[in-house]
Image (cartoon, rainbow, N blue to C red; front, side, top):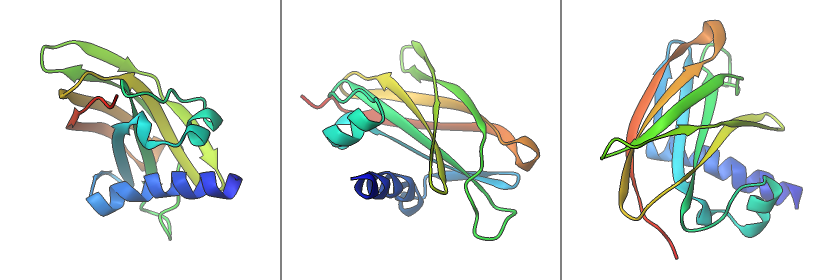
Length: 143
């Protein structure tokens, strides 16, 4: 079961690479992916104590150190918010998850159908890099 969960989480981390959802800040590569929580299986959601329903989404961020061979995952301080088109802001609370060589940061947040959110994230990976990450995404409620 643990291997299956690791495989699923690894797939979530790799998916942003395929889609090109990353930015480089100094010596770190910051990968990000936001998705409806129903994309997770019930077992994975339970294992990581995540809400799994059509009105909840998850932001997954991982930080890789470009200055080291193989770009290993590195720890960082992640904070930020999500703002909708009418200016309502939601502060995001990130949890650090370490599993084998992977480190990722998860934040849960509520969504409405066809809601467009602008994410303003601050990434602080020490001397390796610090800076903002901003992106926009539209969400759909799944009932």
